[in-house]
Length: 96
Image 1 (cartoon, rainbow, N blue to C red):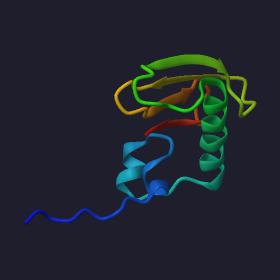
Image 2: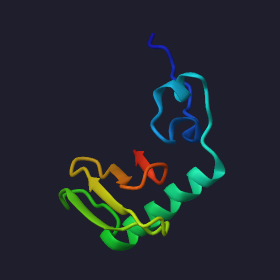
Image 3: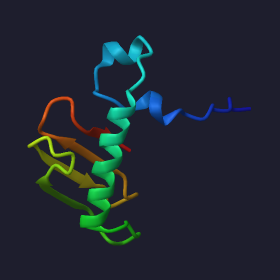
Image 4: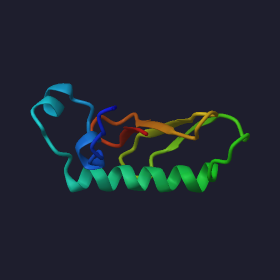
């Protein structure tokens, strides 16, 4: 029988992408999570929600976190998962 996976804690798996920090069990700050939420909301507002058959989508626009950077995103055609990254170090960066 296959081993049952434990649910993931989303807050433990998002952040600045620093693998050493992840290995040490570092948690993202509330500010990091807030920046990611603001970025997601802006992408949804700009690109709409994903529907099967819609195809891939990507784009760039001024980061809604008012950091002066450019937020670039890409949405997979197969499942609608988003990847995004702001050009400002330490701002929003995530992958679903």
